[in-house]
Image 1 (cartoon, rainbow over the protein chains, first blue to last red):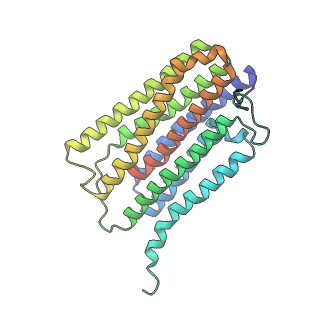
Image 2: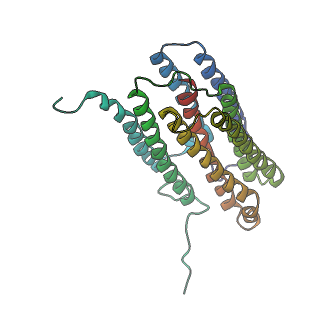
Image 3: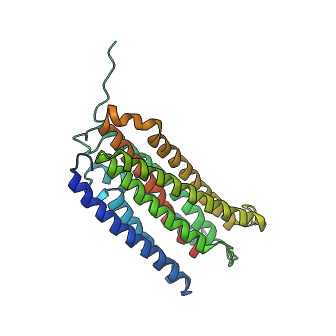
Length: 100
Length: 198
């Protein structure tokens, strides 16, 4: 975002305010859904979808990832892959040990 | 002896498309992602492996919701601080950076009340695995908040001297501090439903 004109920055600020409103609404939605007492699988799916949308908005607009290019996506893609591996590892603990 | 010039500290590197400071910040955030990823992994492992997981966590959802809003609001104020710094509006930069610090304090005060209530009811990290991982994740997140506050306070105070001597570098520093702050917000966006709502 470096080197942008005042007009471009002012335009961006309007977008930030819009994203802020969406994030606030999605936070209320997340809490409201938790009071519906869905079954655990549905509750996890809904919570993760809403959190992912909120996270994408923060990363895309607040962190300017939408206007970045090149190397940073390789860095983040690499980390995101291993982050997902970290989350998947616990699943394998329910598969039992070899020979069992 | 000549002093080697550090290049691309206030203009984008042609290969990476960003300043070296910003790339460094992203690399740091990538390592932070793995730090929290490991702890999220531990949380899933503990939770799925315990048939008798707590059904009543005694967590205060309204307070945590308020804290989520406070953190999102602080993300906006630090963006406005950066935007005003980029537009060379020192007064508004100071205003929004001060607001960011105040909102950070509000977050920590709310967290203090939450922790106090837990401790008052004897809910310690040793009480149950849930409280162990709850205090670890939220405590580490709280430490990140304090770290961010120190950087933001520096950029509001002594660090602002750079405004006159190298404005472009100063704006980049504010942007990097903002990236870190948004990451802290991002972590909370996932911590909040995982710990409080599920």
